[in-house]
Figure 1 (cartoon, rainbow, N blue to C red):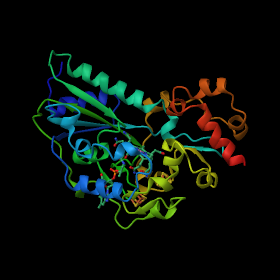
Figure 2 (figure 1 turned 60 degrees about the horizontal axis):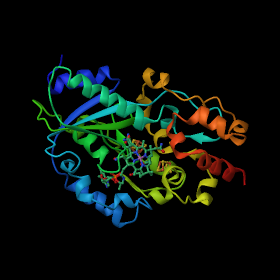
Figure 3 (figure 1 turned 90 degrees about the vertical axis):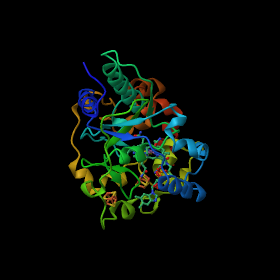
Figure 4 (figure 1 turned 45 degrees about the vertical axis):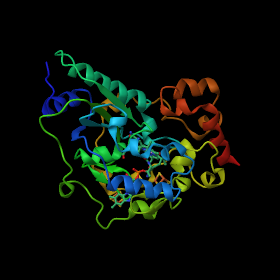
Length: 304
Ligand code: B12
Ligand code: SF4
Ligand code: SF4
């Protein structure tokens, strides 16, 4: 039995395998929106045209859920402590089941528990949706700060997916960002100095055109020349691997149980991958949804 209070939601979020949960009161972002618009004006969103559209809506959750009152932010730790056995590099976030599915499923489980005592409410879930700024809500809910690598840095590092649960219910208590009690970068510039393509154009700002993650994940017409020089074939983790805050990463056993089957692959397994093997090894990961052809293109590109 649960009634909707800040503490009861947090307790159940833990039972649904979320490491951190914070609850923010609905508000409209001003400074965050200006920073976002500046990035768009500079073209740092590359060809992700969806980021140009409905910017007001992106910073006002009422567009996703009418009469939204509270934003429950849930962080799922995807750190498995595992590494790939090959010189081809794949981002750690693909070492677990497709997170859009995994995190949404865990939030739906939480909603079911929240409704189990008969409480009625309307809600909307967002996991990596193109429609709302998830990092800013996590920061607002007191879960971390922006790192200079543009990611949310929590007291346990950055290897977390962000899930949002928008509610049309008011809470008894809200969380707030208390910047001084949360990790901040200080004088560190390791991610900027080590980014293989100098994509972090200034602290907190990524130029997606230069980012290997964008080129290998999102760009429909990738810059193969840029990608070829580097070993990444799906995503990129360099700005997180060098981050001292990730020394505090903890292995999530639930992520390990939901981890992928391809970690033992050697270079030749990638180079000779058939469509059948791709379906077997990758279909439950986010790589599966990008498709066989795309992965193969990046592997062949390295061999040219
Ligand atoms: C588009 C997108 C991308 C793009 C653009 C990356 C980017 N930095 O925005 C690409 C494809 C490159 C990408 C890559 C990755 N992504 Co991505 N991505 C998104 C998505 C869908 C939207 C983010 C967005 O709006 N970007 C546009 C830019 C302009 O907005 P912004 O980053 O908020 O810009 C802010 C900063 O510049 C900051 N800022 C500017 N100046 C200043 C000054 C100061 C002082 C401060 C404090 C801040 C500040 O304010 C701006 C406004 O908020 C979100 C999900 C979501 N809906 O929020 C996931 C998301 C951000 N991605 C995620 C992940 C995991 C990744 C990768 C790590 C995947 C990988 N391993 O390859 C990489 C990391 C690359 C990187 N260093 O950012 C996670 C991040 C989790 C976390 N811990 O932060 C998210 C939240 C998805 C999720 N639900 O878990 N991603
Ligand atoms: S994901 Fe890779 S290429 Fe993109 S900013 Fe981070 S280190 Fe640079
Ligand atoms: S590497 Fe350093 S500067 Fe970059 S996000 Fe981590 S702490 Fe901040």
